Amino acid sequence: MSATTLTNFYRCTIESILSGCITAWYGACSAQDRRKLQKVVNVAQSITQTSLPSIDSIYNSRCLRKAASIIKDPTHPGHTLFHLLPSGKRYQSLRSRTNRLKNSFFPTAIRLWTYLVLS
Image 1 (cartoon, rainbow, N blue to C red):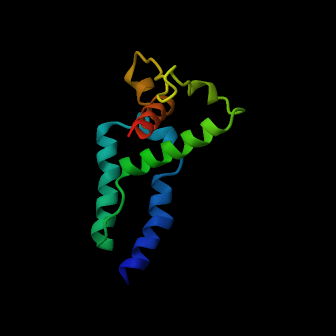
Image 2: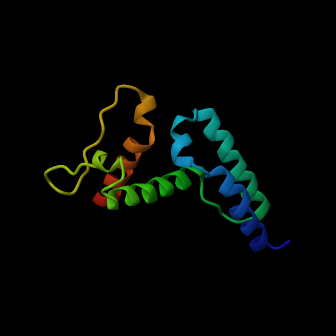
């Protein structure tokens, strides 16, 4: 089979399964779970003989896409969590006492969005 066919198969089946609701569950994964998920991507990469996006980059892109839709929609329940600082450039990060909250969707999305805006 050609590399293009294998890559399309990976993107349509395996990547869609791995990234299903990734913004909800990836923040709670342990480092060991993340390594195992990345191993699946690495095996697919060696089979297709092409470079594929890492599981972290998939998570980051999905977070940014979801954050953009939340920022645009003032009726979204999470819209108020994206609060601009007085400078008008950066968003106020959510305070968290635990790593579980710090790694959840909203604090991560705010960090990624702020980094994207400043760079």
